[in-house]
Length: 359
Image 1 (cartoon, rainbow, N blue to C red):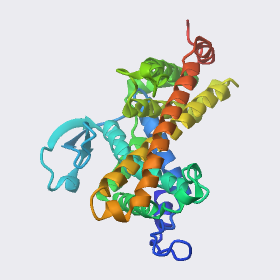
Image 2: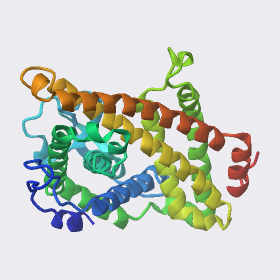
Image 3: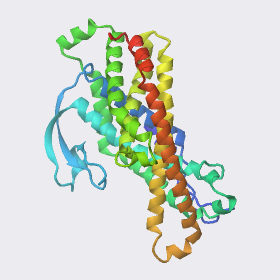
Image 4: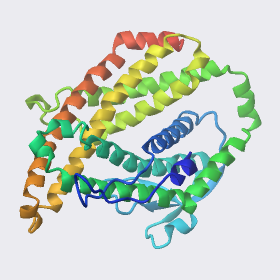
């Protein structure tokens, strides 16, 4: 899938016609990128949820601070020639499954930026969601901002191509392949063979469902008051909401992969609950990213000569910023509503019965 998407990339072009000179987004295949991103997330869910099933082996790796990502406080594993020029790297003991898990997160983050820009570019088309929020007169001044987003989109896709061609990702693919070839220790193998897969799947689903309920409930409660006076002091932050989204994605993908082993028609309703939540959270994330780039555009153009030359474009961007902020609040409230349904006593009862968990 990664090779198929990379092979489809074409150079960017200049647009004529209605918007002469406007940098058009490259003729990418967004659908391929989306599917590739989903496959990464599915593999991440599998590694994350199967720690007690999949075998692993000891390894050493270099752990280095992430550069250029000040908003992130964690670290990622890097190995070999990927750390040349970095400082603060230390060699640590780890295992192959943990290393693969962290490297998938790295790849997912880079692909995610490109996917976000695809969604943004689509929203700025004449029939796009953001364009529809503007009057015809306002939309006519979108050109400079559309070019700004198109350039960021090109950079994001080029970054993905560079990452896919890097030794780091090549090693990741080899590592994932080797994980599938590992045989578990005899004792672990005997324990696995004595336990039906449906039982293992049910236990994993229940444990992570309850974890999400515990982690997500305070975030959902705060999100329910987003934008109101009641929210002051405890409104859920964007990263907190996005963190719940990532947990829900893992649960949804694991249920999709192994739910059939439970042989209960109600797994369809469970999947529908998660899909509904993820839809609301996807809209929230889109609005959040859009708001961030709108602010970035306004900051970059607030000084002369841009402030005067792009006066109309800045006014439209400011209008969109206000609308994106309102949409972000709206989607956060919708997430809270749907999460409360997932965490309700009725929902817990259904999950408990399907997964055959003792009360």
